[in-house]
Amino acid sequence: MIQTVNSAEIAQKSLAGEALSRGEALAVLELPDEQLPGLIAAVYPIRKKYKGTTVGIQILTNARSGNCSQNCAYCAQARDSEADIAKYRLVPYEKLRGDGLIAKEKNLARHCIGLSGIRFTDKEIREFAGYVRELKKEARTHICCSIGFLTPAQAQTLKDAGVNRINHNLNTSRNFYPAICTTHSYDERIANIKMLQGLGFEICCGGIIGMGETAADAADMLFEIREINPQSVPVNFLIPIAGTGLANMDTSRLTPEYCLKVLCLARLLLPQKDIRCTAGRELYLKGREKEMLMIADSIFASGYLTAGGQSIDDAVKLVTGAGFEYRIE
Image 1 (spheres, rainbow, N blue to C red):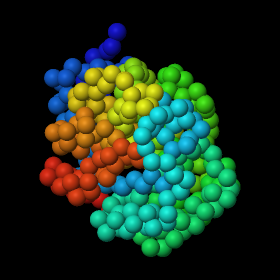
Image 2: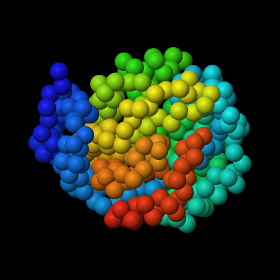
Image 3: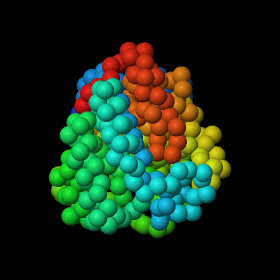
Image 4: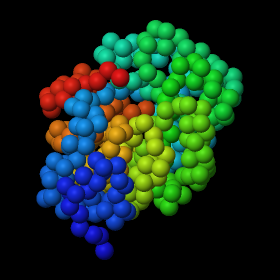
């Protein structure tokens, strides 16, 4: 039985630095839709205390696409995917440079770079590190990489080149993880993150909602992320892509109200972190952006690796039109 929850009380608990109980977390996700405005009103002071009224807008470059050895069911780049996507080993430096200069020109918070694959050779890492080194000279933006499992030496090479944050999502709960990926384990992901933290990297760690998990799985994932203590938490909502293992996933549960409750729970459990509303926001939260930004303080613009997204200029208009300002990190 799901316990009832008092939005004002749990918000005060979060502000005091206390973790919600698992029962309280589930109650947030199961809150009746008519009580959602009160929940958002209670969560907004937490967002405002730690993040003010600014929104970080970030751009994402898919620097290496497809041909991955892993079988993540949601991913168009996965081993078993038949999705119609571009596949390439590493983009020319000019592509990264162009996106980096856009991030600089538009005063975006951070340039995120994704590379498909789970492991890389030292030669590949050195080549990419050379790109990063030049990019830091020319664009001078903060750089975050999503780059699979690194060895400590490879991670240090990237750190020395100017990467200061690594994205490594848990994606879902420990219990549900085998339903979406069997080619590596949950514990391998956590071990990789801890190694990176030991080297001094900031960590970006989040997940995907809508892959068939229960509300309890969503809550458990956020508790795991709380334990990791990352700097930023991207919350994705599944975009079913033709040719992937989740192409026919029923996403009817991803109502605007449920998506907003998930964001609220992320803010309550990780009050001081960047809560980033990422893939799927254009699909599931269209028309609810002001409420979204009362909870989340960061968004992506210009697409999500293999899926399109809102343009940078439109994202800026969205943020300012909702009464917020976008942030230069």
